[in-house]
Image (cartoon, rainbow, N blue to C red; front, side, top):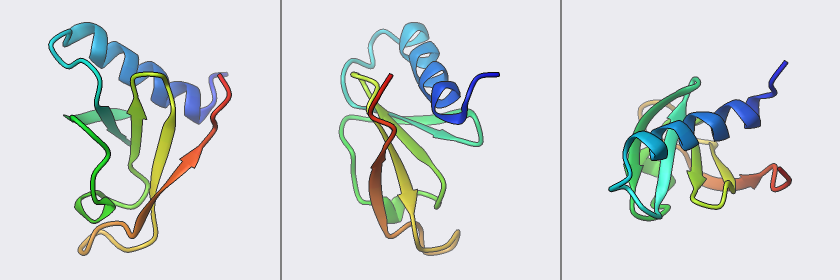
Length: 82
């Protein structure tokens, strides 16, 4: 079984493979689905708590705190090992 961080990384890699014009930046994933791309990690208040951001090197960040209405409070780095 593939763990959560692996699924998030796989979803981000598939997105990057399908969208080669999206170099660098971060891929945004929520509930195992890619929902966007940004050129850099931005204010977590723009994202839902529980959203993931994956950079080009596979580093994963999770939006924590806050709520659905106001957005998350911060980004926290998770699972840095491959």
